Each structure stands twice: as C-alpha cells, then as structure tokens.
Image (cartoon, rainbow, N blue to C red; front, side, top):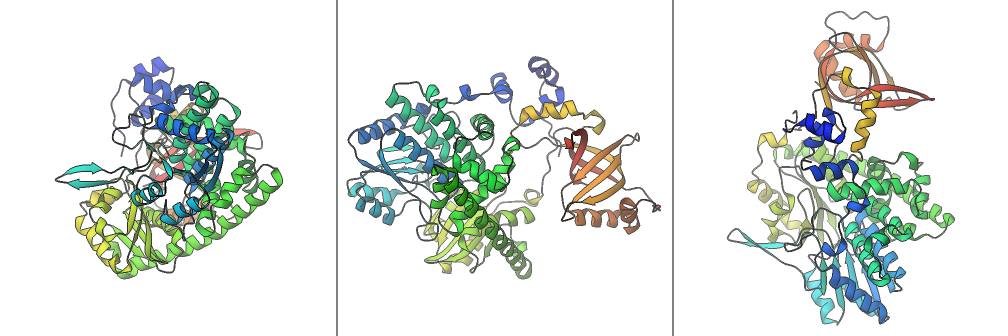
Length: 593
C-alpha cells in the first residue's frame, strides 16, 4: 500500500530545507503542524514536557520529601521486564540521591507474578517499610493497596498502563486505586500532553521533580546534571525495550538517550555492551530492542530480575562485567528454549485446525511461562493474527497475548473478564491468569466476539514513496538519517519500484542467509542490492515463477538463462555500504513480488 496522505510537500521542503521526498515521509508519520514538524526534525531535551503536568506529581513529591525528612523507610516495588527494571533503578537512584532510606523489591515472575500482591505488601511491612512506591505497576492493584492502607502504610503509584474500567450501558467507569498519589498519564483527568510514555519515563519525571524541589532548582537544570543524564539513558533504554511508539516526546528521549549511551555514565550498561560485543558508536533502537534488552528480560524470565537491577547498580567494572556475562549467557539459553516453544506452537496450530480461528489461543503446558509472550509474538508474525500463548503455572494457567493493529486486546479481554483470576494490558499486548478449566471457554468466547474480517489478517506493507532507484544517492541516505531513530511508530522509510531485473547474485554469510544481487531498472541502469531475508524462500519463489534454471543462472556465471528474465517489483530502502574504507550505495530489499 502506498501512503497517500496529502500536504504541500514543496512548501514544507522550502520551509525546512529538506527534499520533497523527506517532507512526504514526515507527513506519512502523521506529523502535520509546523511546530510538530520542527520538533520532529530539530527536537532537543528543551522540548520535553514538565514533570508537574502529570496528575498527582506535586502530591507525590511532597509526600516523598516529607517521608525522607522524617527518616521513614521507603520501598520501591517494580516489575521484572526491561521497563520495570529501569524504572526501579531510576527511582532508587533518585531517592537515595535525595537522602532517602530506600530499598527495592522486584517481583519474581513465577513466585509473585506481575505487579503487587499481598505477600509483597506484607514483606514490606515486616521490613519496617513506611511508604511503598510502585513503578511500572500498581494502577490495577486495588485490593493490595487497600491492604497496605489497612496496615497504616503510604502508597504512591507510578505506572503507565491503562486504567481498568467497568462498562455499564456503554459508559466506562474508570477505577483508580486508593493510593495517596497516583501518577499515571493514562488517567482520564490527567492533562499530560503525551500519555504514551513508558513506566521508566514516568519514574524519570518523578525523580526530576523530586530533585528540583529538594535542591531549589528548575527541573531542566536537574535534567542536564550528571544524574539527570544518566537516568535519561535508562529512560530511553526502557522506551525502546517496552516498544513504545517513537513519536513526540518518546522520539526526543530515545534520540538523546542513544547519543548519551555512546559514552554511557552507567558501568553496568557499558559492561553489557562489551559482553554482547556492541559498538556503542553504532547504537540503534534495533540494538537495544534485540541485543541488549533481551539480556535484561532473560534474567527476569529464567531466574530473577534482581540480577539486571544489580547490573545497573554496579559501581565498578569488574562486578559489572561478571553480571553482564551472566545475563548474556542466560539470554543465549532463553533463545534455544524459545525456538523449541515456537516449533511446538506451530505444530499444535497446524495439527489441530486452530489456524481456522480468527484469534489463536495456544496452550503449551510444559513451556516455561516466562517465554509465553515471546512465543506469542513470533506466532503473530507468522499468521498475522492476535495470539495468546498459555502455559501451566503453579496456581492454574498463565499466558501472554500479542495482537495486530485491528484487535484491541485489552478491550476484547474485558468482554470475558469473568474467566480470569487476573488480567491486564493494552491494545497490542496483554497478560492473564485463569483456571485451567476455562481455557477452552476463553478460546471460544474470544472467537465468538471477534469482528475481524479477512482484510484485517493480510500483512500490509506500507510504502512511503514509489521512488525509482535512480533518485537514491549517498546524500539522500544521509538526509533520511535526520528522521532517526527508527522503530515502532517511526519505521524506516520504504520505497518501491516495479520491473527490476535480477542480473546476477551470490549468497553470503556464515549461515548463507544474505543475498547480494546486481539488478537493473527498465532503462538498464544497474544497482547493487542486498537481501537479509529468507534466501531459500526467495529462491523458491523465483523458481516457481521463472523455473529452476533461472535460479541456477542467477547465481552461476556462465550459465545461459533460457526463457524470461527474472523481473520483480521490490520494496527497498537505500543504504550506505562501508567496507575497508570505501563507501558505496546499495539498495536493501525488504519485499518482492
């Protein structure tokens, strides 16, 4: 599908000194108003929103400063994923910088489950805790917070998840827990300009406000201090790891955070880059999302996320290196377990006829419950359908869901919420617990209620501009880099051209998973093209269309091709290939037809 959003691209081009193509790409990201275009291209930390715009922020700061002055014990209760770990560290670092008597508790995924539970509250009380601060959880913890209140404890919630609601006669009644302060931009009466921030950014804003108030400084001054810059790195890391859309404020946080990470102030993060052989000078959201981040998630999945928290807390390079090495090894083990789980899920879907369902519910009792979300994501990619993967837990069945754009997972689960012992999430991802006896009913109810059409299941490839390759240049690639960082909500621009002739090719890489081709357009101009996708599938597609002889001729010089040339339409983006000091232009093929 070609994006066909309208605007005066020439006028935008002249005003912001960019090419009309770049102006079109920006418009395709729904960036329209002048101030938004300017911030998209030139946004800096100065454009971030003031912490006090978050509802209850001033109240939370006043309570915490009072508790610190009184010497009360404060416990931070986080979560075991990237966002929860980063949030916990940010709050701990900020509170202790203010002189607080603070410690942390990160729930164990299997023993405690997600968020607050009464055991965690009781443990905090038994440890002499006066005040509990949640991060990346708490917005749905009504009973647990009521229990803490009954013990005389103070609770402050910092979260970013959807506020639960009851629906009556089509009207939603939102339910907020009875905490002393609730800082969550998703609250109906919160006027924060951009509510789509992660839990770590909420925590980061609280720390900025806390330090600013305590030190009598403006929050922007605190943001530019050493601690402010270190914590911004972690806020950016969590924004990517929690797959927030890289729009508006998130885009500025990630762009600035990645730049700061090149010379990171955090010894643990530096050690993790070294353990994973990551070049800090070439950090991208992809690196954080698929190389560094999974190492943090793995420890929360297979062991305890406390290890990841301790990594960020590490004060010296030696202890940081040991922790980073352990996290990497655990992630390597997680990858193999995930591969087996995905294979088992596909086999169950294909063998049992589940593939006919509009919403896939796969029950894998023996799979480690911590891997359900990753497996669900892989299955969603394969079938382009909403997916829930359920596993057997100590007290019934637990599961995670990953959705497609047309299916609001949290809303659909709310329609059958009586089946769950616990559930939560948002549009594209969710978690749940339910009795094993309810698994079939859950599958049935989701599919009975499902209003998805066949068109919703088709993978849609969005093309920014149907641009001939002859318009691409090294200067154009450098101009596109102004749109970075790329990721969820701000994808790398994609272009398309029809009637591309494949002249010759070779397969590269230790695993033979990279194709490098010489291609030509209709006017005979030749270009270098590289493909990082499934080479076997590409060859099979070409063989089906043009015959196996055409495939042989493509890869072997000297073999004369009989019959038609290999001519395909391709979706691509231009890139710069740097090799041994030489710089050249290459096209990266994403899709073919």
